[in-house]
Length: 515
Ligand code: CA
Image (tube, rainbow, N blue to C red):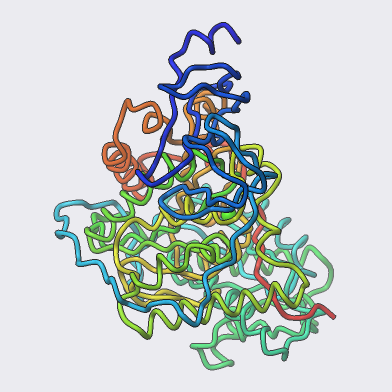
């Protein structure tokens, strides 16, 4: 192994001419003494980790992406390994002084002729899947819903070949919570909009208990409560004698909706109907070099095709927000961006924590020293378009183009919140690897490195690694990813998480007290 490493030519990537560090590309890293151009490595530098390209004095700025990612806590001569213990975290951008809408990117040329096969809905949205989503108003019913879903899949689904799946939208909210607390608006709005995700075709069915704080009919605020109640089944209803009767009741209501959903068929729609969510998880230092920039290029293509792309994860954009507020379409959108950052700063402060709680140990092992470096790599996903809308957690998207949908960075919470915002397909970049998947929408997982794509050949859907080795450009890889998005949206290709049926639980963001 070591011999093989030694035989490979040393490769490193410097992203910006002003950077005084580069990251090592070679699998297995590079040993001390390696001659990398005119630099002799002083330390062993692991793969994806940073090496200094110049002598950096104690307190000197360490620059990557052309931005300061930290200050050296001791002198770092040229050729040193820069691990996370050697950087002091810079202060985050001061929100009050950020420029708003000062560098709004001009629209890129429109992209015509791209389509996918989607499911049109009565409300004008388009789904990528045809799924019966069974909403729930409280976690008490989760076991019953899971049981019913198993039986529906076994007995009913085969009769409705146009329906892809049945999903119980179980969550931990609904009771034992401060339902009138100001922040309760977040989980309630999330559950309301989750039921309306375009992949569920507008066929809402809610299973409730009967005594919960979150009344089931509130999940359908657009309907008068008597009409909404027709879509609700409460387990405590006196008409039910025993568990079996409840299951029969759910099956009967499910069958009505399956009949409706079965009338849906895929039709050719323009790529402008895409609503793609982006996120990352288990990131490494390649995330911001390969997968995220390629995804950013694909995001630009979707925007150019008239579609919608949302990026999220507040704690992972916070330290790069000074690069985002100038890109907001107007000052109002810029102020909405600041409002979401401020809200999260306060939320973290209330829990007596701060942004240094991110990155994770795995991120650090993958070469990401701190949240600043992670954020600079993370926002590469957003491409180069203007930001046309900023959504608070769980709000539904109402504009096309590039959207910032504020969510926590936690993979499951971000996924759930994006589903509520109307995302119908997610692209997930990862450097360390994760088997993450969602039942309600397909997830394309993009590996930042070829090593990972090969090792997890039946979990990773796309390899962005060729960007690091110079075998392909960001534009080429981004174009391939865009085409894969259209294939998956059309049902022509199944991501691995759907092949295996491995899906994470929904995790509704609840910043309000649990009682
Ligand atoms: Ca994440």
